[in-house]
Image (cartoon, rainbow, N blue to C red):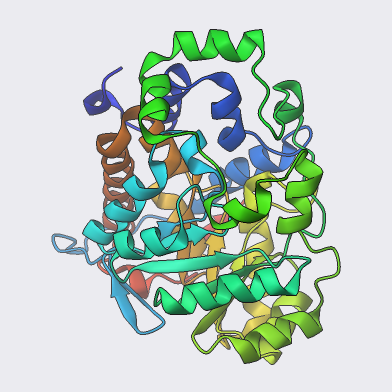
Length: 379
């Protein structure tokens, strides 16, 4: 299937799976343990019904959304993905440049394969920075200082990694540091020459922002010590709020009380997210966690939804349930894997087209006017 025949994000995923070695594809595509949460994220969106309204002039539809003082052309942006260049060569920069062209946010992960400085430049003012709080305070401070120097205005603190997620696919693929060259890996490289040659040309992917620290890593446990802080508390978040002078978001919120606490500490927004089902296989899908969080916040702070978006209508479902904006990671990643920069553009086009058509069918001419009144019915 060529890119021009890809009608959905699922079509792009199918094409990407054929072009990428299994160990690399599973790195992004996989979830925690049985992958229940990964599946439920998607299924729960499909269970939310939107009620069409007709006899409305929908010849001019406005998909813009204003967030933290900036107006974006679309109400969704790119979620952070660590080690993304292992999925497809140069994926980080491909997507950062796409977000700059399309005027949507790009979130650079602490664990990205490209330095946060290069990604800030590529995103051209649309870059957000996602922070993993390290068990070493000097590492955390170093990243924050670099983000300030690179002129990021939005920092996203990820709260849902007190322990590493158990990802069965990665275990089966023997994903390790240093990377193991097994017969299965060699077979995958031979079977996927475009990926292999691209990786050879761009260089072996690593976690670029921690390159010096991770040179001596001999296991994933060493990596996790850098990326994960089991002792991260509300007091630590308050210190980060005091330290960061720009917009501060907290990612990984699923409980209404946690959302309320973020508001009390003066955070500017939260991301309702379960890490795309990659951290735990239990717990609620994000679209089900969203309404009680929106109720308890009562408009006190911005709410962004992440995890599970595969259709343009999913973004409207999130808005109708209380979100102001959405992030998508895998949907855009599948586009890159399906065809590099052209595939990323196709993924954005699919979501954009589906969003516009859904708004038209619902009789709504502006995304920012979407609300729950008369719009949704949950089975």
